[in-house]
Length: 503
Ligand SMILES: CC(=O)N[C@H]1[C@@H](OP(=O)(O)O)O[C@H](CO)[C@@H](O)[C@@H]1O
Image 1 (cartoon, protein in one colour):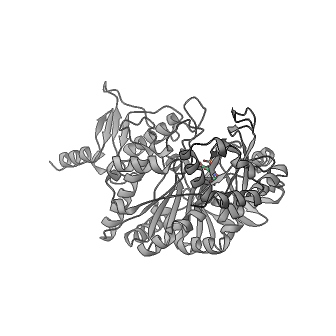
Image 2: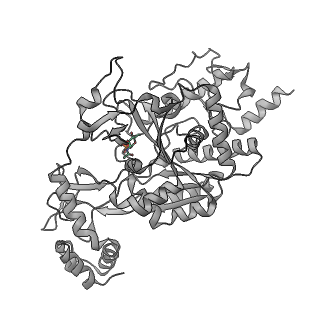
C-alpha cells in the first residue's frame, strides 16, 4: 500500500487533488480503506485516462458508417447452408480437439445486470424453468456433457477448463454461489475465476468522480478488459500449462449458449482461423446486437450503440438487411492469437465512451443522484481485437438453436426471463418431436407441434437436462412415446426410460 503522501503527490500530478477533499472527515477505518483503493489505481496513467475520457466525450469519433460494407455472405460459414457431411466433419474435429484437452471456455461475467434489475451476478439468475436451474448451472452441465460426448467418441478422459472473468461486483458472490452448489459437480481445479480491472468514472471535464467521501465511482473496464485481465491473472500461462490451444469466449446471458460447441470449434480449426465469431441473422434493424462487417476492408464488429439507424435499416435488393450478421458474443480464439494481443495490441484497443448517470458527493459533501448523465465510463469491447487477426472467420448459426439473451426484466418486449425460458423449452419440444415423441398436457390432451420460434409463451413444462442431451442427441429412448407434461427429463428419468425400452 502507498503512503498518503505518495498518493497525494500522484493525484496532484494528475490534476485530481480534489479526491482527498474530505480526507479530514474520514474515520481511521475509512482512511485505510480509501488509501487501499487509491493505491490500486494506475496512478501513472490517471491523467491520461481522465483527459482522454473528457476529450473523447467532447468530440466523439466520427461515425464509421461511411467506411463500412457487409461481409459477403459467401465469406461467412453457415449451419443452414452447409450439408450434413460438412457439419458432421466439423463436429468430429471439435470433439477430437476437446478429447485431447485442447479446448477451454471463457465466460465474460463481470457485468452488473443493470438492465435486468438484479443486484447479483446475472449467471445466478433463474429464469423460471421447471428445474429452477440458474444460467451458471445450465452452463456447467453443458460443459460436463460435451466432455462426455468427446470421451465417448474418442475414448478419452477429457476436461474443458472453465475460465470465468468476474469483476469487483461479481467475484465474491460468484465464488460463494459455486461453492454452495458444489461447483455443479465439476472438478473445482477446472474452474478458474479471475477479476477484470475497474477504472474510475470521470466528469465531463475530466475529474474523477467521488461516489462517497472516501470512495471513487468505479466501473469495470468493459468486456474487452479481458485482454488486460488475462495478463494480470496469468491466464494464458494457465492455458499453456493445461495444453489449451483454443478458447471459446462467450457472455453469460444467452440461455442457449453451446459451450465449447464442437461444430464451431471444428469449423474454426479446419479453416485455420485464429479468431472467429458466431452470428445470427438480425431480427430487425433496431435489435441491440453488434454487426459483423468490414470497416475500411477489415472485418470487425460495429456495436449497436455506434451504428447510425439509417445504416442499420439499409436493405438489399431481396429485401433483407444489408447489415444482417448479428454478433451473439460467442468468439473463438487461438491461444497464440491471444498471446499476440497481450504482447502487442492490448494498448491499441479502442476506448468506447458511455455517458451515464453516476451518483456522487458534491463539494459540500451532499449525496447527489443526477437526473441527467454527468459521468463518462470508458469501456473496451471484447470484439475489438478482430482487426488484429490474420484469419478471421464468421459462422452463422440458427437463432432458435443458439441465441436467446437475457438482457431485460419481464415487462420489456424482448430478451426477458420469459422469452429466454420459452426459447429453451421450445427447443426441448423440438428435440422431443425430432426423437419421435409426442407430448400431452396433464389431462392427456396432445400438445401442438412446436413452432420454429418461441414467441414469449413456453409451449409446455417439458425440460431436458443438459446432462441428458447437449444438442438434441441421445434421445432415442423417447421414440414412439407419449409423454405427459409437466416433465423434466433428467438423468434418472432417462435411465428409467432406457430400461423400459429394453424390457
Ligand atoms: C461489447 C459487446 O460484446 N457487445 C455485445 C453484447 O452486448 P451487451 O448489450 O453489452 O450485452 O452482446 C450482444 C449479444 O447479446 C452483442 O450483439 C453485442 O455486440
